[in-house]
Image 1 (cartoon, helix red, strand yellow):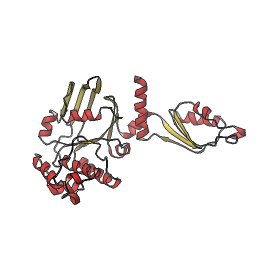
Image 2 (cartoon, helix red, strand yellow):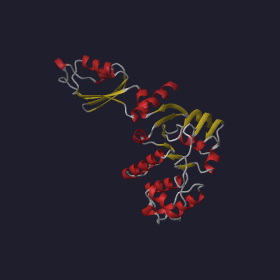
Image 3 (tube, one colour):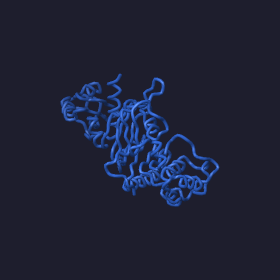
Image 4 (tube, one colour):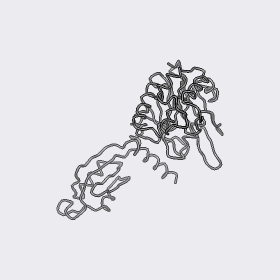
Length: 315
């Protein structure tokens, strides 16, 4: 179990900038991670997630600002064995067996775990004698995870860790990561699977164009989006409403506080920033919606709403 003091900052970004030509990959980013947190890093393609992880791992240097890991440089923290990483970039050594590759990672780590323990934790004991270049995509991901957890690191950084894994493998993977967190380790993962962030993360960071748009629990991110979902069934025809009132898509789009609306057959789905007022106005049209449901946004819808609002603001 990690001996990191509870008040220690694991990772600190202070006004960090990184550009590639005219592209601001990281634009004034400031954030801090703390011991025992499981943090999801979200953002659309080009948001700066990979660049942020590269800076955290010392693979690239910031143009300005500071990045520290356990109070020192990323390179020093990694050399001390305090950071384990599982990245999308970079291939695995070919023509070697899984067991041999994991044994090498354990031998190189300052605080190694037993090879058999690492294989079992990653769920790859049964393929330990298979050559790395004969593995499926999901099996390769589990080998990368084994390399990231070959020793007792205090911070584990994962870039799209469950890509290529089937549902069973993904569930087993996250069960392992929960155990890592319970032991006091900090876990930072970037993912496109928003349901994973919703279910797993204690904290969610939303990046967009290199800037931090939102930082909070999944519930706080959903609440910040403000909108709520409204769905119902409605017949579009002369007999659809009371006293002959006809459901008309154009009239529905004129309802107050709508941020979006889609119609599929007889099913209408809306997002509204004031669901009570929208539903009241809906009945005011003389219509009788069936199977009416009003609910908060899921993390995916909230993520889209936050990033779309930022796009509109900066357009």
